[in-house]
Length: 294
Image 1 (cartoon, rainbow, N blue to C red):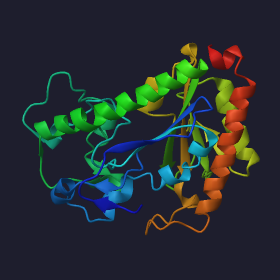
Image 2: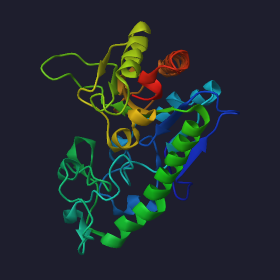
Image 3: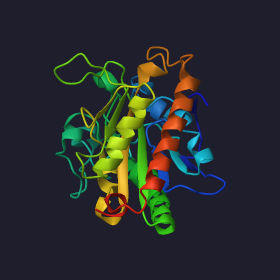
Image 4: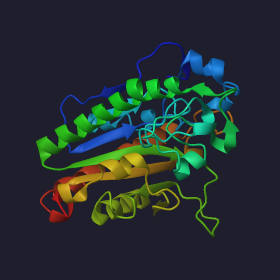
């Protein structure tokens, strides 16, 4: 599905015929359905406003349902609402009227223009022509953000109850020009585990090993260690592990035109192979206390 406008379901869960592996996959930034109200409010053209999308990540991970895991994916765009933030990370400069006292106005993400209601898309391009009503921000949070996280929590809780533990894989993409600090290395993948706090070290190392075995370059936590979702849902001591995976967009999409590269299907197949190996690893070590509970 290419980008669309108008009325749409905010998100959906793609379920396997039967959940057979203790994984939940989440694609919160690949939404490309743009509300007409956003297009009326933005100063950006139809291409520029898409710069914050994790382009087609939902399609890259579509094969996980055949492996026996559910996939939750957003249809709304990240430029409209970012569910990988706290529920109320809001920039007071964006809104008419006072924000409620419980709002987090001082986070680094708010300062950078990337709060729950983003002020910018990538490359520091301002989204809106004018300030928004405070009520508009709160409405998006109540009607989209909270139901999305309720759905994600249910999937994780169901998985944990069924298997005794669970692994959330939060699926993202990153700009092709991302380099490791102090080097010219441009990794194909970054695995984030909040520096070992959201998932077992064994799980993260296995992910790196399997990606490298498939011919990719992969690093851990730098420059992306995981956002709110990874941090919030990863509880290794309870047998709940959360990994963030970032894919270099240059592997599969032309970042100027947003057209899929010929290698797109090969990458999707490689990701299915990667996730199959991850599932086998978790199954083999299901009784290991490093995974079941730390």
